[in-house]
Image (cartoon, rainbow, N blue to C red):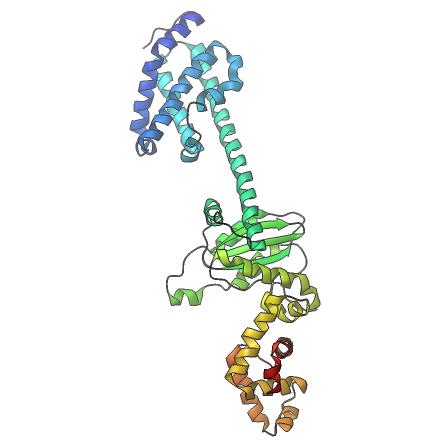
Length: 396
């Protein structure tokens, strides 16, 4: 048991004498009781040791002048490199403080109530100071992450990439694998970013979030890679993921761009989604969310070159190359108001022949001409495709 000094000056002198001993005992206790400390690389162990020693030295200074409380955080954490905050959690820091206080209390023993009360007060102050340091670091990191995320989303929307984009994406902790889609809607009055991220995690997805005035943009990717074909077949489609994220958007239209293979190619999906969002009001009964490819006619009429090329390359040319007979049948069917009998009379065939050809058209291009909305898409493709045909091809 230590002999308790009778005056504050004697107590300070005694504390300064045993400060080295307390530091050594603290480091040994850390090594014996905290597995995470023993597993650290030598450089980080040394930094943690500096923090413990600085805590003991700072306590002696504080005991001499309790008004120095505002400087505690700078005194203790200033001895360690900034990277230590990234490798040591707040919980681990509090464990470090607790062990340091226990070592000092054990060395003091019983009998000096003034010194023991000072240790309790100091440990409270250092705990609050630690929490403040970590809170400020987390706030700064959150603000930086938000700015970086906004920069990445802006790059995706504009399609202007540089060599630093992959590193920026990695810095954000993007967990997406494989295909990516971009979802565009209106920004709600109270945007709950955390709720959007939680919903995405529950759907086995990851999101990048960007706000551009009244537009809210989500870049959606799957958070786990595809294991095999069976896994790919059972995965939730992006349109269903968008439907689950829909409550996080404001009122109005919600448009999902087409799938692209990687995040770097997401600008293509973004352009389609933005173009669709701009013209979605032209579809009176547009669902929420809407696929950008379901708005191809409106996008093409508004001058979207991507929509025009999509209509030509996915509908007009495949039909033309597969069979001019199918192309002529589709033209005739749509011109006759989707009437089987009128189409059959014009083509001098049986109505069942028309039904068969319409089925073949659906197999070739994936759109069903018998539906009102899809008929509009197909007729737009025929019009735009024929306009784009060279004069020589038209004469034939």
